[in-house]
Length: 428
Image (cartoon, rainbow, N blue to C red; front, side):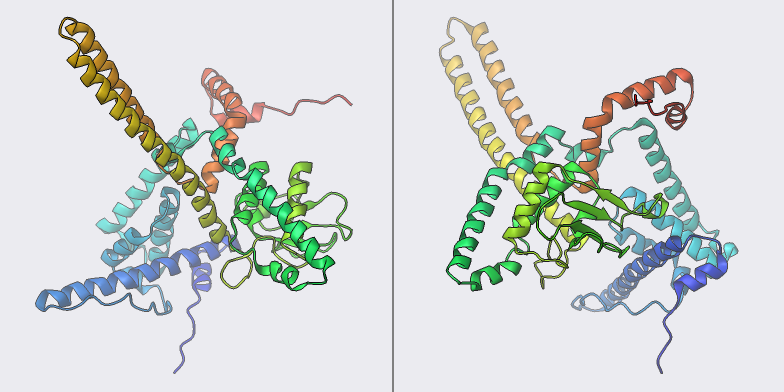
């Protein structure tokens, strides 16, 4: 007998009406993710109990059945294991805890949610929110951000390091395509349409767009369109004229804050140098109207935001891994030279013991400094959020410091200080 799918949203709406539709969708997504982790956690507990009595091989991860109700929240120990398995950022973990507590009260009743586990979840959530509030108030970097942080100059240097090679490759490809067309050999030209999926050229161009406008992952899903064909509110577009002349425009319909935007649509015009790169890329990859600017290497479909997230991490990881390797070699060489210098100074210091000791100490300090420099250049995990903070800090940090100082002197918050700051009237 077929079972009806459990409607999480309807259950939550009945208990918690008057919430935004997006809120219910977020609850459903979180609960389904947590349910999957809890099923795996329960299977692991059963497997452990079975293994205590006899030797057995651990089984593969179980197939997660569809969620039939919210009664699985009645086991706080399993839910706690499921929450621990969710590898998410602190802010997301606080939201997971909030949604778990609300759904538990909806499913089990408030009286059943007074135990130690529920109180622990509440205190953990409150501690995370307090820490994040302090970070927002003081504008300090978190420990993870501090570990992976790079300067804006380093970020731009990494993005622009392949510029010469990428432009030369695109020009060479265009010349080859032109020769193929002139000799009526169109096979290569047609094959080029899907040959660029997953190519580093895509990540490089995306990062140039991101440097210009750090708009999260909104540019990862751009679709080529004619002017006026940008009505689908779920799609972001790169608008190209039929004659390939005139300015390109980016129309963003789908982004995080679209619901609170005045028109729900942003129309952006990239600067001329970036437009030249975009036009060259479109010609090289033989894109047409309706094609996505960036394509998944698996199947050639549109690239997901998560796919671009992985590519960006890989791009910076490879760049800084090469820098770290070079720094490690330099540190090893400096350390060897320092040890040799110290040994030489010690041997020739029969009559100049003090000078030799000073020389050896200086050499040792040089080796330590070289090692510290090598450690500082270890591969970084650079994400879009971190890049946005790096670029915004580089641009606005001085103004922010002044506003924080003023807010402290005036005895109010930074948010209040913003209310007193108005636009400067421009001359007509």
